[in-house]
Amino acid sequence: MKNMRNSTDFALLLLFVALAGWAVPGAGHLLIRETKRAIIICATVVGLFAVGLYIGSVAVLEPVHTAWYIFAGQMLTTPAVGVLTDIAQKGEYIAYGRPADIGLIYTIIAGLLNLLCVSNAVYMAYCGRGQLIGEDEA
Image (cartoon, rainbow, N blue to C red):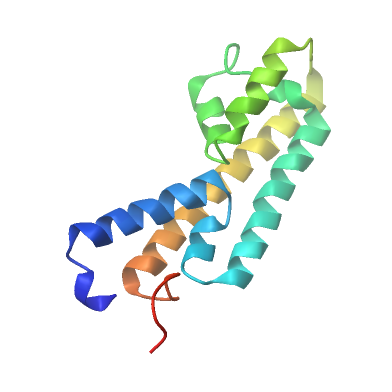
């Protein structure tokens, strides 16, 4: 992997690690064979997001009546948030008060945590830590 660091294939690999880590929390680490980290990241990010939905209901996924940066923070968790938002928009889900605020905060923190984990996976892949799937062990 060291000899391909300056190539276009390496840049595409780093992009693939980043997109995989965003699509499924922990998948970027899984691609570089950091299985324990991948499991911990997936459980933490998905668990935090699920707790936020449990506290505030699916109504906290409201892109229309909230600021753009709030929904962007939630979308950093995974693209599946867009599907959940469509479900929330079609239903008559309403969340008010403190539970809605706390649920909103939890879902945004899950997205920001996933952004941090994605950047960590890309950095680890760039530095050569871990081993890429499909690469022979030396």
